[in-house]
Amino acid sequence: MKRLSLLLLIVIATYSGPALAQASKAADPGALDAVLKKMDAVAANFTTAQANFEWETYQKVIDEIIGVDKGVIYYRKSDKQVEMMAEVKETGASATSMKPEPKFVLLSGGKVRLYQPKLDQVTEYDLGKNQSEFESYIVLGFGASGQDLQKNFDVTYMGPETIDGIKTAKLQLIPKSQKVKNTYSQIFLWIDPDRGVSVRQQLFQPQGDYRLAKYSQIKLREKISDDVFKLKTTSKTQTVTPRG
Image 1: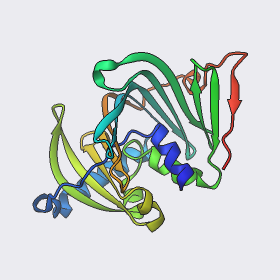
Image 2 (image 1 turned 135 degrees about the vertical axis):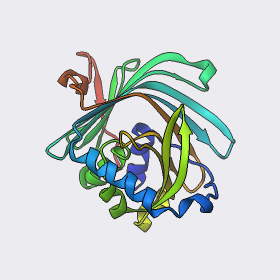
Image 3 (image 1 turned 180 degrees about the horizontal axis):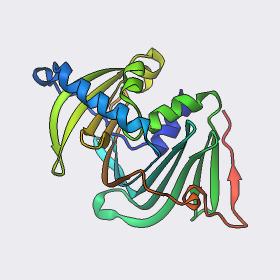
């Protein structure tokens, strides 16, 4: 789970923080059922997704945002195989200190590869037996079905919330697996009910560290070139594989 935690912090857009008490809005099984059915319909025909993202990384111990990344993320699914490419185009300690520092994260073939052009180095992680579990987190909000959510989480409808002019349904996910819960105590998704995908995501660890993800310019089921899911390395690129 430590390896899974590290990889998710690298590639998944998440947010965490204290859960807000919204009991007055949570008890609406009709609204929850409608959102989950829409996600089922989208998942049944899901092939590709593309979106711009902005990730903010927060560290509770110092009560500060310690990093901001901006870029484009791509998903592709065929025959139950999931591929993802995250192109980080700008990075900084805050939104006001952004500078170009590209890096690329590719999930494909049961491995996660982080390419840092500045170092000309690829760091490769073999998911092994954690592949299916890792992929299930990667597609949360982008290709995950409502049935999948209910299988792995206790799902609660937290009420409507408008995000960047989009009326969303906020869902709280509590992992059913105690092993997972020890690492990720709760997840929040802001689902666009018209498209059945998330415009924001929240996944937080018990200690309160988080990454806040904002998605925009979301495109579904459009052709994505095979070339997108390839790392543009050089003849001198070194590959390292962490152990343990």
